[in-house]
Length: 277
Image 1 (cartoon, rainbow, N blue to C red):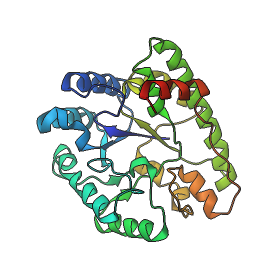
Image 2: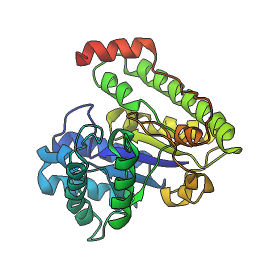
Image 3: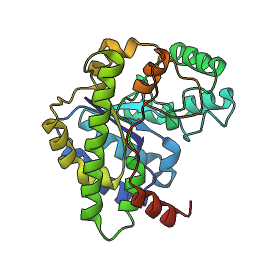
Image 4: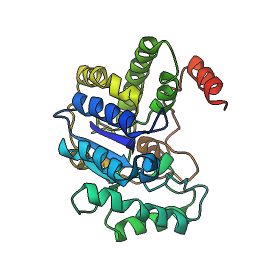
């Protein structure tokens, strides 16, 4: 399994002042010491930090050997903005990452919301743009709703209870995608996990790593995971959903749709109440 973490320096779960983001990052990096990881950066989300603050936080990642990838500047939705605007935003996100990488361009790009193109024209044009600008697209197979758990976790008094529910949910996600990968590809594959930079994952990471080890995973870098031939399979999905690449490969093969476990009803209700959505 490759662990990839989106929305650096911090996702949408809490305060983005330098002290808060530094504390979160230090705890997350301590849990991930010696573990290969790739983080995907949204520089606009760090405006409160300033350039120096952002570089300090990204430096905590790179000093530990983490790979940094491009997740665009402002996390635009490809379903909602013109392709040219999306591409410009992607390039705008690169300078801060390049600076943190010592002057070298990031190797990987991750689609915001996992929206990869609602029609063939947009999808093919963006794929060509990524090739032109020397980015490798970073797919996801273990897709999760950790962001929703994290939002509620930051606001609940019962953090221990929510943490346990999160671990059970993550176990069920692994269980589903492991079986679905075999159904779609005929074998077990090197999975790529997507989670976000938030307090929940900083607190849960030791337990998550134990969970993955119990399920038999060896944690590898993204480059090693991508050497699995499964990632050469065609992406047959066109539409507006952000979905796992296992679903995309299933679509290319014309297989019947089967979806991963949803969020618990109580979590949906709590998220709706807390967020007003």
